[in-house]
Image (cartoon, rainbow, N blue to C red; front, side, top):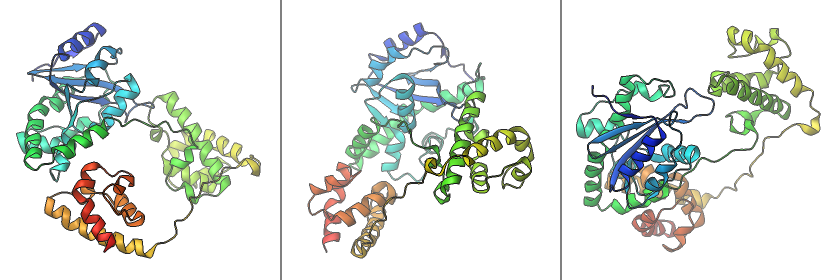
Length: 374
């Protein structure tokens, strides 16, 4: 197993930027520690250009600013596989923007590949096997063992060849312009900062009364503090199901906590006192300070729109089969529902449908308009 170079100094990052600047294309990937840290971070970047593959350790060399211009240069193609998460992380951690994207997963989806994971497409085209066990590895650990470095390098080593094959197929099917629009949209994705109550992000919280919501919010706030202290993901402190159960039953003592569903004795020993304390604080809140779960206004049922949606879904099934595409990739349910409700009458008015891409409008627009006006 050949050793892949690892860049660990800011000077090496500057040299990498100089090496990449004159190129027309290079491949990029990254590894993060989302399964192992409270605040996930980028722990490794991989670059393949020409015959060279290098790994960059941003934990050792955190100043990646020299790479910003070359990664933002639209004249240089950057090949990623499943770029969504990577683009979000690069902007969040380093204010790096990606332009000139070619995403081999998007290309695979638009070509109708049944399996679009990197391991699947590399196995199909090159008979390369990737060991998936490292997908959940802790990439913040140092030193990185050789087998993890090899795995990381393999993620970009074959992307040039893969992109060339997929691009040719896109051209042959006249779908390259679809992909180019999808790539441009993907370049703009960013993580959104959420500042609302934490209980709004917990499935099942909408069934709780206000007092229990206050308990749940206190427990979630406490859990985040504990996870931050331990530097681990919040779910590794206590899972959502445990907190929901505690919020429903509001135990007032360790004995009552033992009766709560999903709480293991070892967790009660470790966190029981803190959980009871947080519940007690919430139980003392005055009624005027209790939170309420926001209710969205129920949409008025439109029977005719439902009929049109049924017709559109039936048409989509046939169209997707004809194009050998997954129906959801061709056009998703929310887009079809918007078409059924808003009744666009021209291709120009289809622009008003949220999420409608230009390639979808040109490829599918006339047929959809015929169906809903029929």
